[in-house]
Image 1 (cartoon, rainbow, N blue to C red):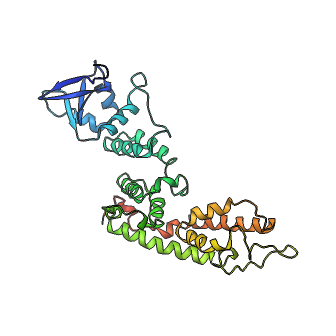
Image 2: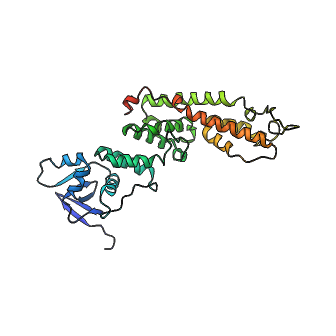
Image 3: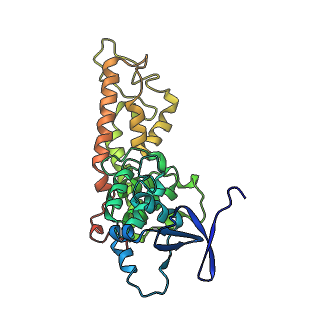
Length: 312
């Protein structure tokens, strides 16, 4: 029948032939989940010391069962096989979870160049310590941040840790009544790190922002305008209606990088003069830069960077 998958019997079992990585002239077979993969020993052993050593195991058949996910092992083969066999797929078009799987399996089989290349691509897709506010939508749910923390620790990639901790520390957890709670998958140290970071972050935001004229919670105190007659920025409606003050202040405390970014991009308002608008944008931009610089103090990894596997 059209579209029916080919099968092959190996041992006492029947497996589906992989639609791409079953080469008729291949000379080593890997059994992954319900699928048989037939590839070239010379290519595999040249790229992976671990798989090469597996060949030394005495066996009457040249086939091996692997306890990997099929999608991860296939992705690894997509990358290491010559382009005449299949097209490599490391690109920013890949979903970030697929790249995490690729990095993990590449490290397991010591295909170091693939792991390094995939990590570089992943740095463009997830927030990092260098760019903590890029692509933050990946952390719209706490489970994704927990997954990244677990992955980063397993694979020794600390550049992804602090932004993921920031995401958890700024989550309003009641909005995500997940069972079981994904936070319970963190180590006790990391659970404490989220809680402590949350307190430190909010304390710093209050310290830096409370005295600003736009953050006086219903008592606008803007009196620095040099324009003759002043402007309305600190009294009536400034950049937002006065009744929104409490909501904007709350958002600044809970989601400071997002809120400050929005404030940087606010257009000129008819109630605020140009000089006050420029001062407002510059001050909020500087606050955002300062908070990013302080992520290391909010989420200190100094006690476990030497053992980044993330023990208790």
